[in-house]
Length: 420
Image (cartoon, rainbow, N blue to C red; front, top):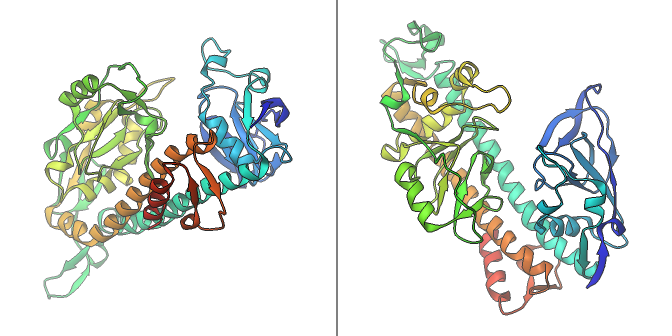
């Protein structure tokens, strides 16, 4: 291992204002992640993005053209000493919270970052380890893109049936035609502020399924235990267990007395990135929730795909625009979520569940695979970084990985199984 200070491995640069730029295809990043796309770039190349303000743990990596704003630094890595992707993963493992210089909003200075001690193996070893990690991340990204397309397919059918109302309808002459465009009768609904098919109902969702929320307490984090999932750990591609705090079994049990998550339930972020929806298909649930709404569709799983898509759809977006509160930190209250108007027609909901079951099954398979790959990556990462696991003769496929250590055979098998 070679000892460095971070200032010997990269040069930190300030982000800049982007508001004068026109829309384009170049991503703009802030401390919270991707913000928008513009027509100019600030830097082209591999770079580690280091938060200046806000969530200091949100370290990011880019390898193309990009722009960053003033809440996040970008960096130019000395590739003669450090592989950028290896160094990015190394820095992610560090706890830098003690370097915070902010009084209200967390902040980091050039100097705080520059003085961080870094211990690196030789460059060829860095590159081999980086290849393992990047291949795992690439596989996860491929699965995410497939799921995005599958989600679009489900949404397209939902919009056709429940927004345009052209669901299959057998006319009086016995011919199946799209309902609305073939003259199906419509009636104005006051709760939704739009027309719906005659005979359909609109109910408060709490009259259809139970709606709860997670704990309002802040359990003390511990080194190892049950995970506490909050709104910021809720992502369409999966739950971010890596960044979630661990809590004790006692706290886990107490939270679950109020809001136990079960297979088939739906989670909905209530604060921050409001409206992120996650359908729980995991069989073994070892996490609790905070700042997250819980739709108990596990009690009637024929409704889960419809309600999941409804929560991400047209009517919910319009409803949230009227009930989101908060001047600084936006949030949506449990009362508003319970009163959400739900369009209800049992026959078409049942048909939608049948039509989309295979789509959502494939989405779930890939999500669970990604969780296994993420867990494997997060388990391997510290072992690779501190030399407990080494990489030899690694080519272009995860299945060719050779690991040296008492854990090597376990890791290799896990990677092969995760490859799918």
